[in-house]
Length: 216
Image (cartoon, rainbow, N blue to C red):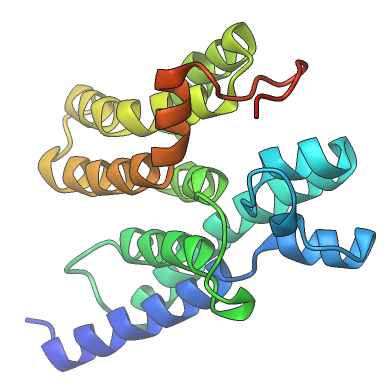
């Protein structure tokens, strides 16, 4: 039986490191370094790739994509390394790290707790925890984004499909379904909540489409 004091210490350590990694808001960092500006003062006010693309173009947006995706990957890998070093096996450190990296991205301690919506950081986490699920999400979601020309539609679809695909993939593989599916559901709900303003604009038909005139 594992020492629960050590388990709690391990969870706290992973949570802290993942939160700090998540708080590295690459949209803000890149806009300040390359443009001497803060992307959060433009467009949607969101520190994410889409607002970077609309505000500064493809180069800064691509760098933001790489950075936000990578910190999700790194958080999970570091979390699992810590749990392995401490001999903790009662839960997946990747899930703890993924959750706190997401919270760090949304509420970055380094940038006044005003960050992004967490889609790319979530994708980085999924890439390590279940790469097949991420592949299926990309296959389904990317065409929808290009057909609708609305990024938020793809983000919301991914948030809804993540727990569904997680359950299906684990079931087909003969692995336990409940724990990972509940975790994926929590992630999906957080991402959906962060898109609540986008949902309102979608309902009213005023959501921005890329490649078209912006809606006020």
